[in-house]
Image (cartoon, rainbow, N blue to C red; front, side):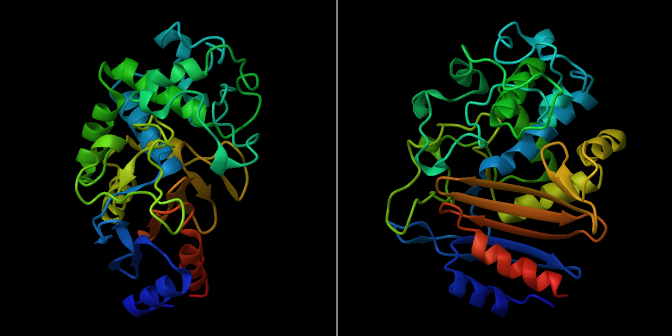
Length: 330
């Protein structure tokens, strides 16, 4: 089925979708936006509006790590203990960069999604306004034991990706958000996107809403993302990043292949910062958080893609289901 502007508009109205959609199908691209980026001011979302993407940011942290590997400043087998003595107690200092990338490091997780029963009422152990860099997160880790032995099993880890971002800072010798902006976003032309501060959002950036009213996610999430979330993306920028990654403009061929090769031999499994579906081959990233709902998938054989970015909690789900069902039906 060819998805048209009229179909998207109808599905958005049907699902109550608020956000932006990006679609590439049969060589044609289509971007649409719905709802308001600022409800109090009545400002609409646009196709270039940047939206919080929650855990979809992990792919970008992985890409930043990959850039450092290709530059010879990190290795996949670098042990975290080689980078800082602060990485001990909550993680085995022998745990490697690759184990962190693949959620196999055993690192303590300050936001353990296997244990949290009600994610929407979760409160950070530190005031969110104190979290501006990955190293600012470490007090939430200290005094806790690792979740498991390194390499023992795969366990999705927000904490592990915070440690990866801290490793980026140490290896690059500069703030994580600066390195990510220059080496990943700017290299792909993703100039509307970035790890923005909550208290200094640039123009045309969507506020994240918790429901139908004016309550936003301000003061509920870290002031600035620490590697596991907090990145703001526009739908066209996300297309640019997918294309650059697939074309080998971000990582060396061998490293890019490693990133999209799952550790587990399954139809659907984790790569490095993304999920891989084997048949037909598809790469995807997603995120859910207070005031955020994000999903993007890319089919490397055809270059087709689907992106849905919403500025309300989990708000992409119904719209995304309609789009993916239409694509499945052909």
